[in-house]
Length: 235
Image 1 (cartoon, helix red, strand yellow):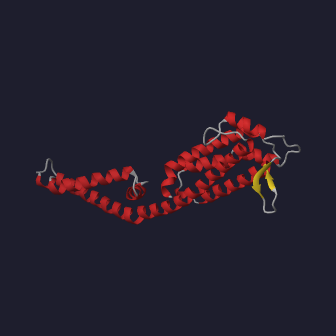
Image 2 (cartoon, helix red, strand yellow; image 1 turned 180 degrees about the horizontal axis):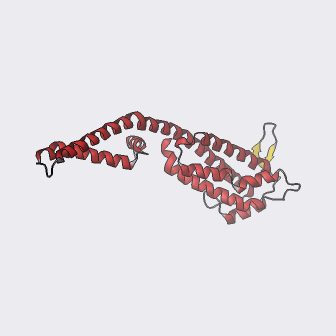
């Protein structure tokens, strides 16, 4: 798809089909009335008056639709395009965060995953090998390396920050994306991370997170699919 085609698709994306169908009907009636119906004798009394009434009604609708298209719809599409460009960048950053976490899990456990997102069996093996207080490659400003508890909390806060920025501009954002981001924000994985800080005695490894991580990665897989389908075109 070339750039011109993408721009045309963006312009008409969101156009109400029902209003457009009425427009086509109105234009068709106007043309039929001007070039065919006027030359036909009245089929019944006052048929011409009725025809003129619908002619004027259709003409008024076409005029109103043109006004709406030029002064309202195009402006809304421009706003939608600008907002979705912003949202697309933030969603991409959310995906980059989760891919960073996956790469760190893979590197630290020395277990190679077979796909972009690990499955439950792979996560069971990975999380059993990683100590909750084990060090990661994330380095703080003072030079010390973050533990897994600190590492996951750091990326949790990053993801929540991106989601909050998107929700502020949710007016033109697809409802499916908003719903999916809300599910990520309320995910059990984020609750698990919060619970680490209040436990009197932390577990030895990350195996307790295996199920919540699996659900969390599935949500991001859905998000990536929606991003490719609905947002990637805006970048």
